Length: 329
Image: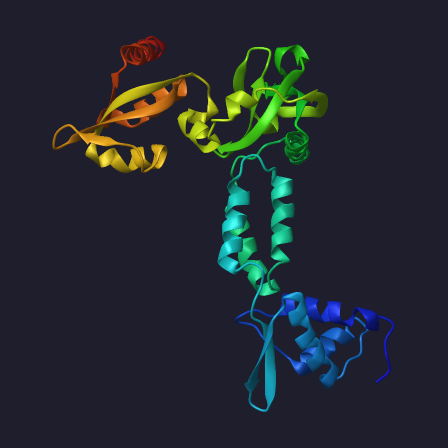
């Protein structure tokens, strides 16, 4: 059989054909493989294709042949990701507010290439769960990369921080002042990405919405605040910060109805100690950054939960109640 000009791409095209056209439910016959290669101007005979299919295993692409009548049907039986795993990734991307709509579609398009064209359609149907709020800052991916680079290089970063005004325009915070921060980690909370870093000007750990950081630059200065982060558990820090809003960290005593036990465990972990008070209520002490967002979380759970200590936090709640009464009276 005469060799085509694209013959050197034969193994690559065969892998592409098998990955795209077959899966656990879809098969391809030997004549169909030969025709598919012919579409790329690649000639092949059965014997050479048998050898090539075996060679694909060296690249991690395992192909199985199943006899059907007098012929065989072939399909790929193993891939780096299973379809349910990719569906989870698609849903995570789709529900992430910090990923723009355009980048969402681009990332999902790349994931579709990891499965057959038939399974890709199933992933595409996941995308139509759309309508979720997305960030408008397309540069976030480069910002995240710059933060990781600064952390690995042990350097500070400089950036400007913005907010959206009522005209949907970017408005720089503090008149466009540059923030000079030592980055120590990234945290995910309430569907947003946050930089957690040390501000040496005020000697505090602070966090910033990554999608609101612009013009990020790596500084020549080495990072500071290492002593503050040695004992910091990033997951624990996020757990204590409601909506990643700051506030004084305190131990707060709560009186909680038994039916909210799951809510407390979901928020503070299974290691939290819940002490029975009576048949209906238990008492729990939790470490939180006391902020208006924390008080709002307590409000949202209704009469089944109550702050009972310390007194200054109870006073903050009463002040918040008075403010709301004045605001809505």
